[in-house]
Length: 258
Image (cartoon, rainbow, N blue to C red):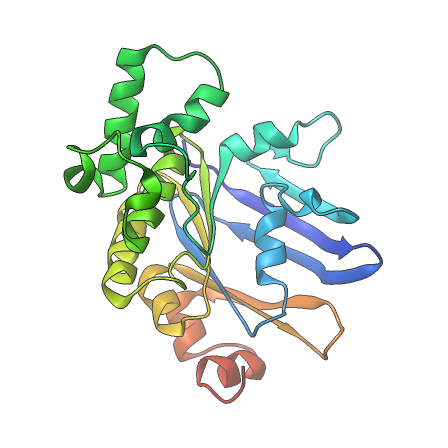
């Protein structure tokens, strides 16, 4: 079941360097929220705090709260690995496990989570590949290496792998930046279908993509090089692109800077 994300007063650090400062926002369930802003303003850092990937980096830490419905993801005793099962992630470059087959790639997370009967596994793999609009292209070669697929197919395979464990939230950090225009449109169409089941957050540098796929858009910026990134405003996507509240947002979406 898709869940709501509530972030309050969140700052993230790499050692002593503060990358983002005092971010608060709500991401509604079964919606797509796009993060936009110039390079280096903390979008990718912020999205990685939402499933505790940020702290994988040595010396990285977070202050503030991230709640998934009523659960504090940074609460005492909360297992970060369990958080990542509930909040899945798709990265900038497709990263199928190179030694695994297409089938094994999709099943990998399920096997990590515990024993699943082969008959049940077959059904989940098929359902996940269908959910990623990839089944018809690979159903006759499930035992072939996932790394042998095209870039766009590999990214959809990574999405299938992420949704196979039935997360409540799906994070996407520039999922189309390494893809050709046709593959990009396929992923965008897929995002529109997946939001019926998941809460989706996407980081993108592509203004047109944010306008096409998202319900709400959050604009991030930093006041100067070396300063922490901040959330400037978040609103309905149509409003951000047509009538934003802050001049810096208007300058960015109109191409005056960034």
